[in-house]
Length: 390
Image (spheres, rainbow, N blue to C red):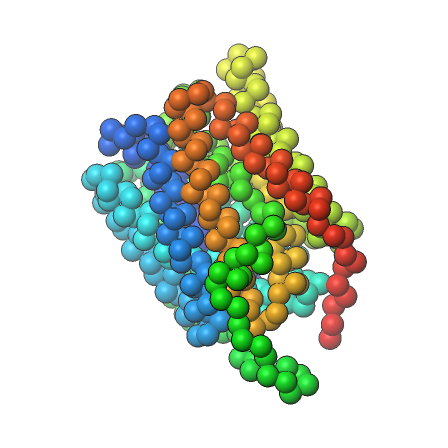
């Protein structure tokens, strides 16, 4: 539990820094005369870099350890925030996102760390606690970003960089290595050669994850700005919805759902909640005056973190249970890569359709994507919970 607590603290501060600047990205870009459709590629540039780096970081962590991979990745994020803080042009914003994405490829490493240190039956619950820590960062980060913005456009990036540098020191001093080198099985047989990155990607391609969340985050700031008149100084009041609901779900209900229904059924319930949230979000603005429409919009928006809180830990736990221990870093990194694919396609498609076809269309398209994930989720075989071993 001590290792889990330290990892939770590291993940919390990492997400805190990310959410200090992420909600402001659309406002910074449009202030530099970028068209609204370009916000999608800007957001997706992070995912492109993360897509490339995730399986590489996973393979690196399998060979050299989880701890050095996480420390190097966090250091890259700190440098990215400095670039963001002092950006004076669009290319600097793009550079910031790319550098941050290269460091952000260690998300799968953190998941592998959990799988290293927890029994199979406890992994979904532990991943839920890790997600709760990151959700707490989602709660606090946007508030801090909007407050810091009031002191100058460079301040959010500088504050985020300082926090992450503290996080690097914290991880270096108190986060122990979790990876155990195994070259033979308990019976003395040599382990088979590890899979290539390409093989690991194909082995997890049918695992539904959380493709639509990135679409929502990518277009949400633009939607709130144009539909409800939200500004850079007030956007911090909306993004914490993801974190508040996520913390409540992951601390109190995710473990209960997994114990009561098992990972597969929990994954299915989460996908349904996510689908409903996306489908209903554009409805209030089309039929109600602004004030009541915003209230109802927030209610439907809350279904998105409810769904992902159930979906993400359960699907990741299933992947870890069906993976050989000596390949956990590679496979977790590969799983993160497929999330990264939707993190690229989602924001680009969302902002283009937002600008061309209408403000509600991105949410409908995201719901269509989730409907495919729903079909895949209901194709998964149900298994009895794995008993904890001594």
